[in-house]
Length: 59
Image 1 (cartoon, rainbow, N blue to C red):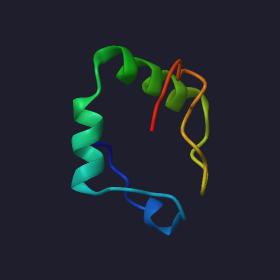
Image 2 (spheres, one colour):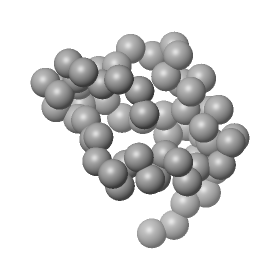
Image 3 (cartoon, rainbow, N blue to C red):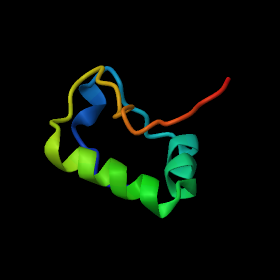
């Protein structure tokens, strides 16, 4: 994971082992999409990750 020093003051952060495990379990296409999204959007408190790539979801 990247260095997140200083972000602990934000309201929507998750540095847990579960989050790291989830990120590591993503396929390469998903990782590429998230990396592209992260490169052009500023980190914001209480922001929502990109959801426009979801094609189908249940549950």
